[in-house]
Image (cartoon, rainbow, N blue to C red; front, side, top):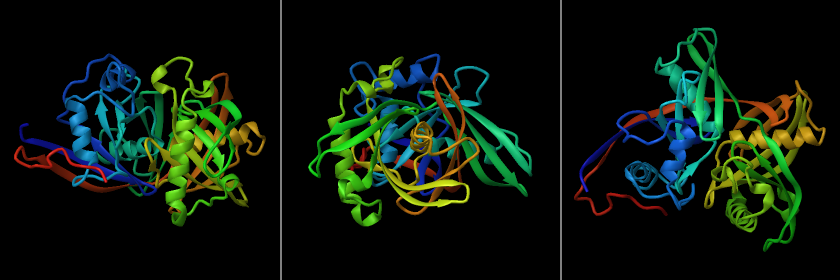
Length: 342
């Protein structure tokens, strides 16, 4: 093992971290972001059990203690599919890689404008187009007085694939809804398991999320019609109702994803999934707003934009702030050079 140096720019979006690596990366084979994603996962690997390689060594270095933590999230900036996007990204977390990440897209939009990679007015908005493994998404960066004040994430269409799927859990049977929104989400009212979305119940929520995700392995509703790497439940969303606002419905949620990681933000692509379900139920109309609160009290505002044969197009608005710039090193003599997870 040789000494290594990795530089990152870190943001948080509504409390969820996002670590951006934009230079010094080993080349990743592929002509598109989706092809690069498949090559990073590797033959015989899965997004949450990828093949080891130079790029995955960097992921492990940045997500594990003592340089990271089990709640860390980030992305490798790679070339876009074509000139229609500004850049591409491979999203990663403690267990591997993900096909979508709304909070990361918001952070990347803010970063691209902050770094001057995409020109933006002092007052107004600029669009940052990003190729991700599930398709092309857009971050609209809102500016006032030369400062970024908010970012709106337009996701790939969100499609409901199954309703009222019965799942047995240690807390009792529960029915869940499945939506593909760049990744596959299972949506569960928390009170059906006698749970509430609050920090005091995090252990129970995480355990239930892992159990439900495992129980849905292989369910037809989790299969993506075009790409097997987009199949399988990525996240389980536990949600509860809050009093309506003047603009529309309000809910609190926690998304448990990968192998027991939970989103500190209201989850960007997960909010798209919730909007698709609410729209199908007739509970939100175009022009109305979902106030989506996280387990730590931060908020995204979500709207349906249109309905297409591929699914519901959504806009999710939140805030993203830079938290630091880092130079990480790996000493070859360090017994914990690869880090560890607790």
